[in-house]
Image (cartoon, rainbow, N blue to C red; front, side):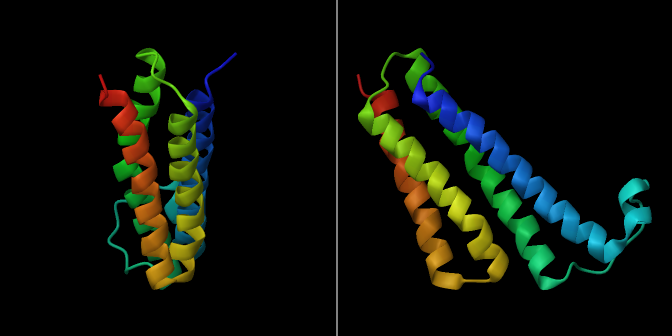
Length: 132
């Protein structure tokens, strides 16, 4: 049976693809298909607000995803999985999934709370990873 922490990482890969395609869709919508299929060497105007927010949300996700990979995979390899590592992992992933539309819609405080919840989830898993 596969560890739930690995399933969380698999779903996180899906979420990363959602981030990539959401941002790329709005970039292509603004800059055009020729830009998307070209070399992208030209200087472009700033993205519209929603597109800019989705690009920043993607960058923000990519800041925490490597940490999540290390701690979630790490607890599996170290044999330290538990109900708490699963809870922490789901809290991280669920919060990151909620974060994307909140950021895209420009919701300020709740978006930050979602980010904070995701960090709490990572801390829960990290604690189990380094406990010895």
